[in-house]
Amino acid sequence: MYELELHKIMAAELVRRAADERLLREARRARREARRFARQERERTVSADRERARFAHAA
Image (cartoon, rainbow, N blue to C red; front, side, top):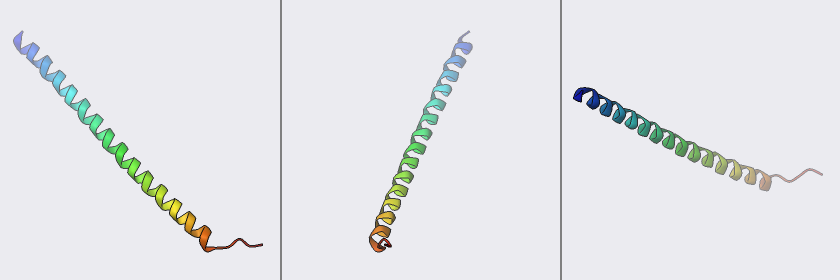
């Protein structure tokens, strides 16, 4: 009986750890995506502004 209870406790702990690690991976992935998106947005905005200032509109 004691071994069964101990097994249940250990299994629950492993499930909790796996869920924590999964959440951590998702948070890291979301931060990485946010940085990548911000970098792309920043580059796109800068290059778009530069092109507008460099070329005049044709009449």
